Image (cartoon, rainbow, N blue to C red; front, side):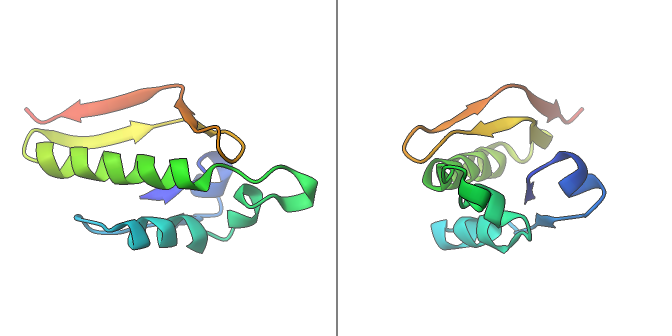
Length: 100
């Protein structure tokens, strides 16, 4: 699942889903298909976000989830700060839920 989080995900339900495994094209589509993508694309004169780094992060998390799927029940990164284009992303907090 991908979404901007907060009210965008919880109230507006502006999220996208894919089943694993995913390709780069699918990860890019996940980002671009949310209704609030314009916020990442430089709406109202803001700098464009580093969507390439965001897609890379989604792909790495998907690979981790697929590799460890029998051991984990969920991964949540919130918030993931997406910097301006070319500057990457920063995870401020993460939670990995282990199956028991």
